[in-house]
Image (cartoon, rainbow over all chains, first blue to last red; front, top):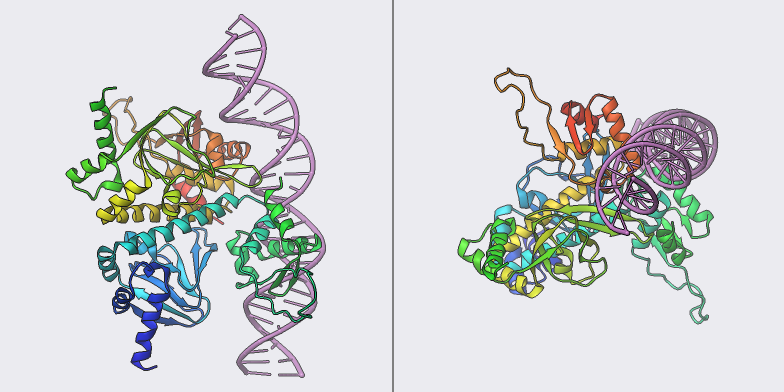
Length: 242
Length: 242
DNA sequence: CCGGGGCCTTGACGGACGTCAAGTCCCCGC
DNA sequence: GCGGGGACTTGACGTCCGTCAAGGCCCCGG
């Protein structure tokens, strides 16, 4: 890839990312000059757990799996960072060792900032700090929500996860003029069921059984990684019951 | 209380709080002029859940209980904010409805900032934004840690909680000159066991049994709200095992 | 064509823990 | 002093779910 292409990449990374949305295009271009691109293939690590990295990364394309290893040796998947999302905040802010291992789930392109470069940017453009605050606040709210839900039964946590997923855009392959028969929303799981189970704090076996129960209740149908939500309000009702 | 006293209160609140530690004393005094003091007695609410409050509060003295109510109606205690800690970030940052109910656990004095006042302060003093970032990053790391631990058995979560508590300063009431007999560290639970159980995502009954098991194992002794750590390394070993 | 490994599912089993209930202790108000 | 209520503990019970095991399916490499 010629140099010019790479540079365009860097700029488009900066342009597309919420973190810098408060800047003018000219300012964004200046930011782009500081960024270091990083391309990883599936399975490669951005950083291991316990490393001392003060760099902050923004996902450009692809997905990065963030997972913790407990003292007991058990691993738990915490979240998956997709395009526009950031990782490495903790090391960037505190200088302490990284708490999570970051592994590319697919081929992934990152935009990496060194601590000093980004700190200088933040000092010059306070809007970046404000945007980071909003990001972190959002992450914190989401994590607290998951923590509050962690004691609910597996079926409920699975139902909640499904309701949070983006729906597939349906190609209307049936007769287009036919009347008001509502189509059930469908979605595609973007992670393996094993990984989803880990995020939800359970096991693949329990997850599998939960999906089977939801299917038996007529709430969903499962076809490999495609889930059809037959009764979305029924799924929501699970959250409220008991 | 005369006006002059109140004003001193406001300033000392600002002085003591990490959020403003990056400011000079003169700047801190200016911040103090913007603060609105709020005194609550035990049981009073700073705000309920779902309210729309964009104000950010700093605890001056006392403690504030932050709890969520799940759609099912179950309440879960998320954290307790003590002196120097902040609450209301989510509303302040997003303008959305409050997610947690905030209730004074004891007589509590707060320093409250309106959204606009604090936003203006942040714009003028970026160090405040940086300190908020560090605070939120810390909170996020702590919450993620608890989430990762949420599937461990109750005994382990209780042990971890105990190890996180500040120790009592021991008054050496025994013969001061006696040799190197190490005293076991002791701590005082600052919350009811019921509340601690809620924080740990379990029930008072299970918590009580966990303490009984830790006692039977010779790791601790319990005397009402005072816990003696007979074998701290044994408690830590619980975290790693299995 | 065959063999291995990963993902997923289903079954069987046991244990941890939530729930219900009863009982004690303590505090507080009448 | 007495009664009520809340915090805490202990017991009994049921169940959700984690673990172990086996089997199917798919993919890939030999």
